[in-house]
Length: 248
Image (cartoon, rainbow, N blue to C red):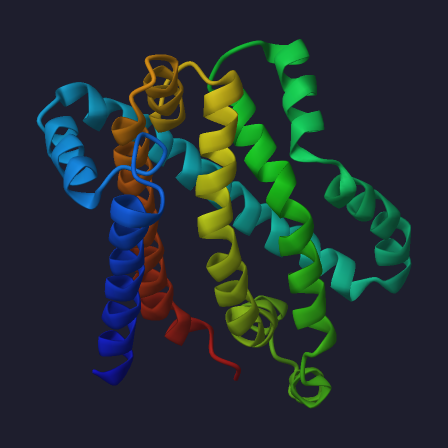
């Protein structure tokens, strides 16, 4: 209850500062008042096109996030279980991690042009190194006594992977989700803005083209709300299934 109250207090403080800034510090087109943004958001929600754009962005976010989680965990397990393999692959991971998003955007535009594949690919590459390194860290912190007990009692390999490895990695998977959801939304929106053919990022580009600043803020607010809802739902789902993967 207290954490919820503090969260709402933080939101209220942010909105208050926004309104003060918009009214008295920087009045004008750069930062519209909350009422103006709210009316624009209501207008957007009355148009069917915005729901189509939101769904276009949402499925890209979910697909990119799913690929990051699945491949990040699987490859991270392999890297964590083999020191030689990890030492060989670490330079590649570091290179991918160091490449700026704008460079990936340029390559994607040259390779595929404008379309849906670019945003997914860019989000995947941007977040995969973090997922890999977090999973490797989880494997390195695994309780070796559990593995020894499993070996002594000849526990089937399938149960070892499911109950020990995945069970011990749950906190690290949650950490990956915590970091990835917001970052995925941001990267997808930027990629849609620059090389997408549909989605909220394209709608923001259109609003900027027509210098409709309140609409830019309304679309951004909608993306933030959808991101928070997505994060909450995924965490609820992860919490429901995590009890199946508790250490033996």
